[in-house]
Amino acid sequence: MTILDVEVDSPQLEVTIDGVLVLEIDPIGIQGPKGDPGSSGLLKMPFAYGDASPIVVTSITGFVFTAAIVITTPFNGIGAALRLGDAVQSDRLMNAAQNNPAFAAEYETNPGYGYTSATQLLFTITPGAGATQGAGYVLLEV
Image (cartoon, rainbow, N blue to C red; front, top):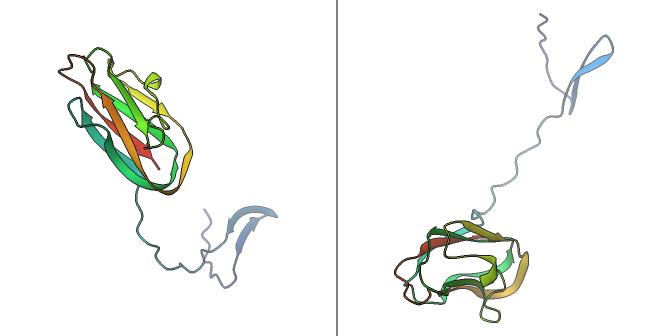
């Protein structure tokens, strides 16, 4: 075993043995100022079959990369439907054909839709005739 005592006085350190480069180190530069705190970019909103609808999920200026509806308790109403969008197009991010509230599962779309001004994202619940159960949550990656 060979022990090297190295003093770094240049911006780059290279170690060679018999002409073969075995180690190259570029030192880390000076750390910049700490940035503003951000958010995770993931929004989660729970819902249930009896909630007043449409529900305002959030207000956004920017892109929605992923929209997911997770059904934890299946809806038992006939004709249950779930949509995710905005006031102009209620199913812009996920339409009723892209999820099935009668089955516990995760339904996901990747709309990649950008809002250029503050826009409320709305979740519309149609619980279906005779509904007595149904719950889950909406996940948005923004």
